[in-house]
Image (cartoon, rainbow, N blue to C red; front, side, top):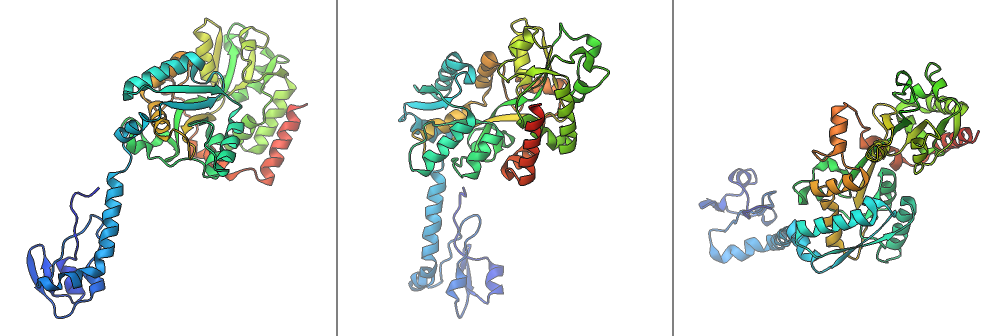
Length: 415
């Protein structure tokens, strides 16, 4: 916001336009004829007041630009009224609660949300209640919000948690509130806005292999996806390898490998598999029912969670850069509690909020300094996939070729 308003033109501009009569910065310039349309200009920094020599001509000379002047004053007022943390807090005090619909164990479930609520209120001086309700999966919630917004209803949740694929659904439908998060919150950097001005990264979930260290000899442990089908190593888990029943992780792997290599890899996996395992069933690796799982969507988070309980589980990246899910919070349009929603999104990337996530579900953002994810990736020199790569993939949508590729993968997995 400029601190000085100016109306007028510079001396050089006056000369170039044949204007030689007026006052500019206290000096008198004479001109025999005036092109009123050229006398005033709007600068990127505001206006210089330009008064004619003769007072009785002031209104005649300035009237042609009065309308523009008023517009700029209105714009200035709007700028002064722009959102700030302070204005959000003031608005939040009138909203009382924030409604959040997500998976039952999101952010550590009830215990984690209670800790987040207390920390949130402490940071912003509020007495807010998080009204949490367990809901359907992220795809279904995105579809619900889009329908609600299009029908003119208030979204059932003030905030939406989803990975880049789910946020893409909301982005394409223009269902997300535009918020300059990195401009509002000093601790929030621009790269945390995975979808700029729409969604903020809350936790990073690299994909990877998990295995039971008690069941795999040290010299046979897999270091990447291709090791799983390497004839020199695979006898250690042949016939006992668990495979996720999902097409998505293989389809996304094609961003690194290409479709032909992925299909060949999938066929080799199926040939030595011992069963299918959903992402919520990694306990069957811990128990020893399966020694290895070919992929888990939140491999590192699962490893830290189970290791804290003394379980013999290890996770390794499947490829480099790692296929990574970036789980973000956004604010759907027309929510009931917009001020609280925006504050909460910003709050979730503070160090205290990230510490609570780590405590309750071993998750955090690799972009917040000092988190377990940030330290692990840095110490092990692990590179995650750039968000823009997968975002471009999801925003592009399924082409005929892409749909055919997924159909082929689904057929392979069913063998």
